[in-house]
Amino acid sequence: MRRSRLLLVLLLLVVVNLPPAHAAWSDHRLDGDGVTETVPASTDGVDPTTVQVSLPAAVAEELGGDRGLLVQPAVLEPDAYDAATASGEVEVTYLPDDPGTYRVEGASGGLALATVLLANAALLLVVGLFLLVRGRTRPELRMVATDDVRRVPPGALLERVQGNDYVVRGDIEELADDELLLQVADRRVRVLLDGHANPASYQQSVEVRGTMIG
Image (cartoon, rainbow, N blue to C red; front, side, top):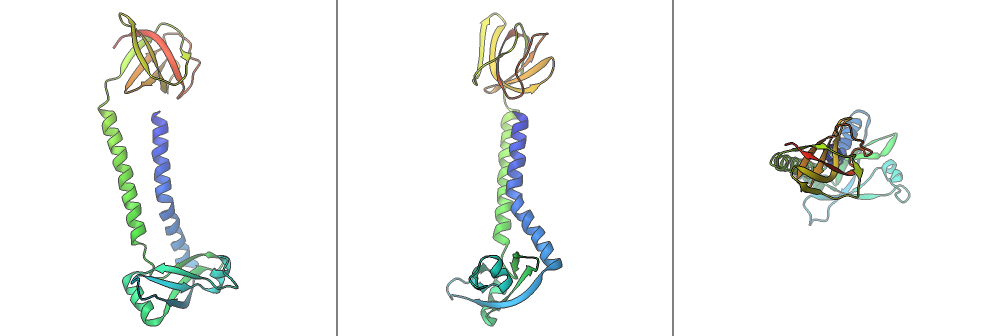
């Protein structure tokens, strides 16, 4: 269970950070190997951030433009927008061997960066809250098995049979040759197998009968 949660967190981190990482790598390639062309740009006079850019022929053809003609909107930084409004032109940098990778110079990336930072902060907050709640869960119980472990359908059970004898049902969170750790709802029960067989593996649901020792 703990491993799966860690893998989920790592997957979310990859999903959140892969796009900006790819964008940074593309910018690096464009800075080193890119070709820059000056192309027409027009504004609608309404949105003071967006211009319509006539992409270079190589880029337009790569993106499926009709006879090499393709107009795309681009959100510019204020200074770049003012310059484009005054000149009617913008610069576009692209890779000659991969024209689909291009950049409109002066394009705004601040919102995207802010979104990534907020997403990372939210993810870290969720992980922090999870660790805080987990740290406040009830103490781990310990029991010695008095019978072989049985595979059962998913479900949590912690039931006293008689005295210190219990039936415990939960998912295997940790597994070793002579013991296993079960997640039973909000409790964790460490089971000492004491020579009894365990046919189950990690994350499978099992039932164990035994004597509670702590």
